Image 1 (spheres, each protein chain N blue to C red):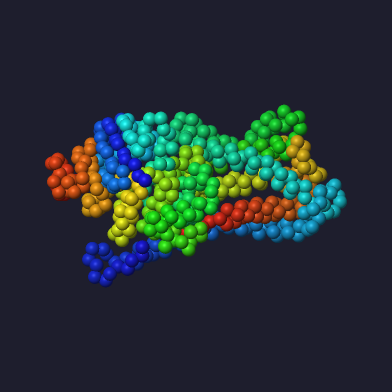
Image 2: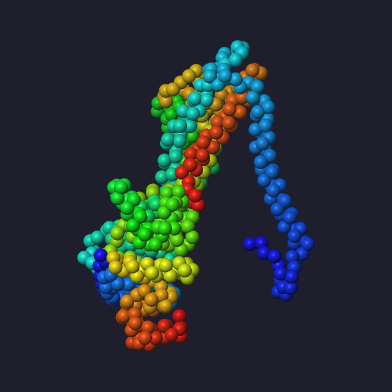
Length: 252
Length: 294
C-alpha cells in the first residue's frame, strides 16, 4: 500500500544557490501527483529531496521536514534506509549495463542482502508483469543484457527494478521524456495500475501527461511552489496568474 | 551516416574530387600508421622464433641449467621462478592498485586525491632500477638475503601506478546515472562502488591490470639485486630465485654460444607466456558477458 507524503518548509541548495524555497505540499496516498513547471524551476530537485538523492551531489544540501508515511526523512533515518522504501525512476533509462534483465530487476534485493532465491524468481516475474515488460523479455531473462533493450523497454525495466524492492512511494523524474509516444502510452497506462499499490509523484514537461495521469498537480516556478491543487482545477481555473500563463503557453 | 547528396540540392556543393582524394589519403595514412606500429612487434617476434625455436625442446622446459661446457639443460627453474615472482607481485599490486584507483575515482576529488594522482604519475616514471634499489633496501637488507619476495615487491611497486590510474579512468567512464540507479534502490555507497561501478568497468580495469602485468613480466633491472637469480630449483619465498628475464640477461652477456642460443629460446618463451596469460585472462573475463552488454 502507498503512504502519503507531507512536505513542510523544504529548502534546497546547490552550494550557495538556492534551488527550492520553502515548499509546503501534501501528496495523498495511492494517488498520482504531477509536478510541472519550466526547465530549471526545481522540479527534479524537489523529487530528489524526497528520497534524499539531492545530497549525493557534492555541496548540495536541503533543510525542512519531509514525512513519508510514518517515516521522518530528514530526521533520524539513514538515507539508504529511506531509499529502500521509495522507488525512483529517472529521466534517462539507466539499466545496469553489465547485468542481465533478470539481474537488473533483482539488483535492489540482491545488493541489499536478500537471499531467498526461490522467492526471487517470483518477485522478478511479478515486477516485470507489473511494468508490462514480461511478455517481451521472458525468453531472454538471463541471456540478454538490460542495455540490449530498446529505450522504452529499458525504462519499463527500470520501473520493474524500482518495484521489485516493494517501495511505498514511486518517484518518477520525467520518465517519458526520452521515449516515443507508444512507449509513453504504455508507461502512462502503467501509472494508472500502479496507483492501486503505490503513491506516485511524477515530474513531467508534458502538461497533457499531467492531466491524464495525475489527480493532483503542483506548479513550480523559480524554486517556488506557486500553486498546488486538484489537476482539474489547475488546468481549468488556476487561481494564480503565473500558473495560468504557463499552462496557456504564454511563457516557459 | 553516409548519405547521398540529392542531385538537385542547392544549399550544399557536390562532394569534389579533391575532397574525396583527401578522404582516401587520410584513410590510407591511418592504415599505414597501423602497419608501422605493428611492424616492429612482428619483426621482433619473427626474429625470436627464427633464433630461438631451434633450442626449445623438452629438456629446455623441464631441466635446470647445466654448468658451462655441458650441452643441454634448460630454464625450467627460471620459468617457474618468473611465475612465482609475478604471482607475488600480482597478489600485492593488483588489489592495492585497484583499491587506490577506486579511492581516486569515487572519493578523490580533493587535495589528497590530487597528491596521490601526482605521486602515481611520478612513480610510473621512476626508472625500474631505482625501484629495484628500493625493494633491496626494504626487503633484502631487512631479511639479509635475496629472495623471490623482494623481487615480487619490486614488481608490485611498478604495477601499482599503472593499475591505479587506469582503474580510476575506467571508473570515471561509468555514467553517474548508473550510480544513481543503485543509490535510488537503497544500495549503500560502498556496495554501489564494488557491485555496480567496478563491475560495470570490469573489462577496462582488467585491461589496465594486464598492461601492468605484461610490462613487469619482462623486467630485468628491478630483479638484479632482489630476486638475484638461481641456477637451481627454489620454491621458498625467502630464497634467491631464478627468473626468465634474469636468465636471459646472464646468458646473453656470457661468452658462450650455447648460452646465447638458450637466451634466444628463453626470450621466445617469455613472450609466448606473456601473450598466453594475457589472452587467457581476456578469455576468462569475456565468458560471462551477455548479449548486448556494452
